[in-house]
Length: 189
Image (tube, rainbow, N blue to C red):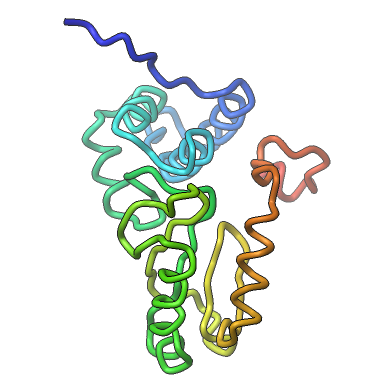
């Protein structure tokens, strides 16, 4: 019995960005573009890379699907299950723990309804994920959401401000290849 599900496809803008990235490598080394292409895939397809999306990445790069599965399952930056609109990556290493990251995690679980390692919150806004050092030890405890760090989350007010900001985001942030007017240093890399 054939599946009626449609095969995922990259947007035209993402295809153009992937082509630009792949040009940076010799044809026989196209596999070297896997990490940036996986980042594009994750951004394009709801914040996670399903097996079907990983198959698409393999097809685009001309590699075996298992090669993509190995990479995506090795790096914790790739989500292999559906996630909420905002993935809160909570630093769990020594300095953050000493400044209350365990209590922060418990508090975030309580007020968002999401659980570390579990599904997104019921409203679909938040996924909680513990990560290794975010290299902001002097500002502990720290949470990263996409490219932004939320620092010194050791008070109710600071946590509430972070969650309020995230809840009030109406649109998803622009994807890098959708932005216009990028500085040449960024656009040409």
